[in-house]
Amino acid sequence: MERPLVVLDTETATQHGPPHLLEIGAVRVLDHEIVDHFSSLVLPAVVIERETQEVHGITDEMTRSAPDVPTVLTEFFAWLGEDWLVAHDAPQDAHVLGFECARHGLRPPMQPMLDTLSISKRLIPESPDHSLESLIQYLDLDHDELHRALADAVSCWKVMEECLERERAECEGEPSFEALLTKSRRFTTIASAGPSHPSLPRRLRQLESSAKDGGQVVLHYGEKDQHPIPLPVFPKLVYKLRDRGYLEGECVNAGILKTYRLDRIHRVTLASSPR
Image 1 (cartoon, rainbow, N blue to C red):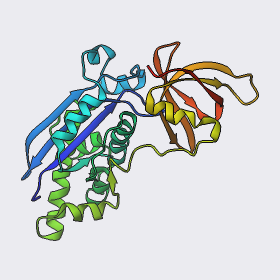
Image 2 (image 1 turned 180 degrees about the horizontal axis):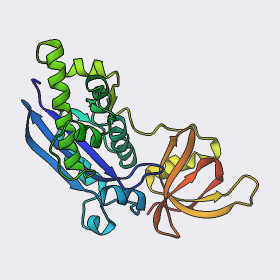
Image 3 (image 1 turned 120 degrees about the vertical axis):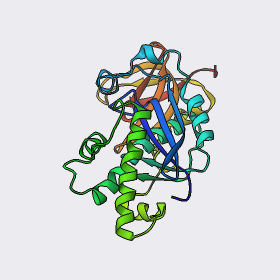
């Protein structure tokens, strides 16, 4: 490759619902060698789910002194610059980062991201499975601890190098990043992978303006056939996920971030001036 590539991986605090970044790791590769790296834990806005903790082993105690998402991603995007990206199951990592950009008002990178999951299925078809762990085992590659961001980024780089070697043998020359993107048939960017925005009825449009100015609202919330319960909330993000609309907001009573279904919000009223 004639230009640097950044191979990345993310770990999340949640397995269900919207993603919350917990760790990011990346390596910069030039001329088939790692020349730099970026790694950071992240202080999540939610409690780490037990299911995800069992996968990556990251606990709430480990992240208590970690920087928050805007700090980490601002530093990472500055470190990334204009370099193109690589990830295993790239749409998933792009979704995590795109969601956090929308959540915190960050400008997402526009450059393409090569998916080694997709490209390995075409260039390493004999592997019984194409998860990163299975490919590492099948190719008998050295690896560090799995399911930690920096270690998985290094493993992804090694899989990419195997794919490059096989593509080089097929085309009898150095393959281009563009050629691999075409062969993967999966074009992904962080900018295009964020949450979509639902069409809000008039009774809910206050959520958008309150999310922008930090205002507190009261959600009159409950099933359609139930008497709604008043819930004071600071709205943060309105989004659509799997054909359903949601509000992410800070519950005033509990002091934590919660997710609310838009179809259960009967109406919205102002509670106080912005804090």
